[in-house]
Image (tube, rainbow, N blue to C red; front, side, top):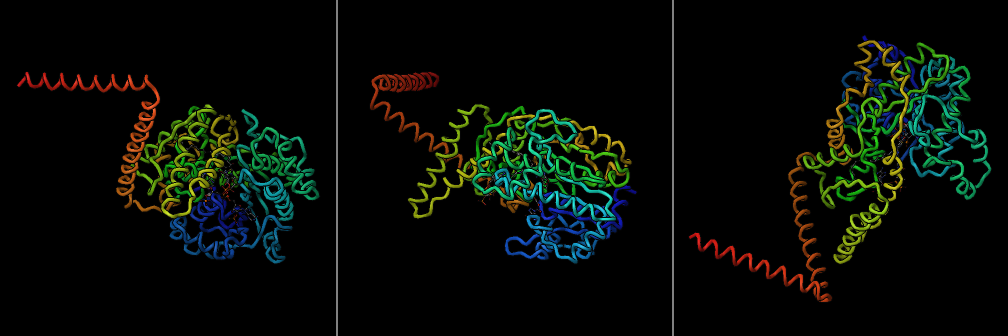
Length: 515
Ligand SMILES: CCCCCCCCCCCCCCCCCCCCCC(=O)SCCNC(=O)CCNC(=O)[C@H](O)C(C)(C)COP(=O)(O)OP(=O)(O)OC[C@H]1O[C@@H](n2cnc3c(N)ncnc32)[C@H](O)[C@@H]1OP(=O)(O)O
Ligand SMILES: NC(=O)C1=CN([C@@H]2O[C@H](COP(=O)(O)OP(=O)(O)OC[C@H]3O[C@@H](n4cnc5c(N)ncnc54)[C@H](OP(=O)(O)O)[C@@H]3O)[C@@H](O)[C@H]2O)C=CC1
């Protein structure tokens, strides 16, 4: 029997960010391995016209939860959605709900965050710092609380090359930042943002670092642990391989590449692609919850959930395997044939952006205009290139994360727990994982049917022919223009034509002799 699964039995668990990518996989695994848990409280806001109940209904009826329904048929009764907005005071939770949460919660998993790189500092601070502070305050009033698990990111200190399992202080105290957000106006905040984030690339990584400082400063007597995952990707094994439901990290770029929009990127092929499957992160998170509650470590332990030092893969290998998978299972209605050129040179990258991205978009928009339709490709391409520019920081560097605590935890688990809550990425086969990832994107994100593969391949063949035809036409036009203007080009042209003629005459004469 798994000790970790047994530990969660009968427990009341609070999850923030349960409607997010990681939160859903966390809930799924909890219900599947510990169906006798008491209740999972989730803090949910209304979104896109859906009530909290409708959102929960949608999650429970998704493919991800199919296995759960077999193991835990009354899952609907065990999930309690509480309306909450983490941007509001006391999270806008009603008094009754708050009372229930304070008196019943045993474990907290704090996953909610804004993961947007370009969020204004005020918003990123509100969610990633102030909300964490408020949640800690709530946690300190929970008499039954056994563990508080905070999800951070391995990139919270991406300004360093080697990152230890410690909290690195930021120059300005989080409390001062929180205070200043209350009275500074937006224009001033925008002006000071670059100075505050310093050598970090965005407000996300900076506010996640501040969030960790808050956890350290406000931990009081709480039993806390921090988990720092690197780039979280599709599921590796559980509940099935390749599940993914958002565009973050590499997923969006894989779509853009598969649809032929993105054909080159400024990336270092040998840089480590520190991807970590979401089910691996969830397994570690649950193991950490158990360890923190049962063993009560004296200090706040930080766990790096990364793959680079156990089983490294690089961006070059990843790009190659992604392309190889597109050959077997292409995406439907591609704009151009997929390609993946990695360049480290800024000028080359700008050249390819002009030739391979912007020019085809302009030509396509011209075609749309000619056929009386609204042009849209240039706008889409500009957005895509903006996204790519934001991700470039992470594909041109490698980091080293020490993993003593993660390895220590692995050795503390029973063989059964090591199997059920496996977070040993040494066993991960990258080629297989990446193939399943691309397949998962096709099935669960793009919702494309596998029956459409022959038609998608046919479409790619048509695109290849158009490409050849276009290049030939372009070459002939350029050559014709050159001949019209330059005597030298005319001489070369005359030489080539007469050489071909002589060669053909010789060939014809020698074949006549043989007969
Ligand atoms: C040659 C090709 C090769 C191909 C081969 C393939 C091999 C792969 C090789 C390369 C792999 C590199 C991986 C980098 C790793 C990242 C490291 C993460 C490190 C930290 C990890 C963490 O700890 S934390 C999680 C990461 N956190 C994010 O990753 C959020 C990013 N994101 C945003 O910060 C906002 O999204 C942003 C972008 C501002 C737009 O903001 P915005 O306001 O302009 O617009 P929206 O967000 O509304 O999105 C507008 C339209 O962009 C679409 N879109 C959104 N995201 C997209 C995305 N990633 N790729 C594409 N398309 C995306 C969306 O679907 C919309 O499309 P539509 O308009 O058609 O609906
Ligand atoms: N994905 C990744 O690559 C990585 C993620 N992480 C960390 O993992 C955690 C989970 O990330 P992930 O699941 O990918 O992120 P998602 O963006 O998928 O999920 C974020 C969650 O936070 C919730 N949330 C955001 N704002 C509010 C609000 N005002 N009130 C209530 N809930 C809110 C969202 O709710 P709603 O559905 O209503 O928007 C959603 O459930 C984060 O802490 C992130 O920093 C760390 C490393 C990498």
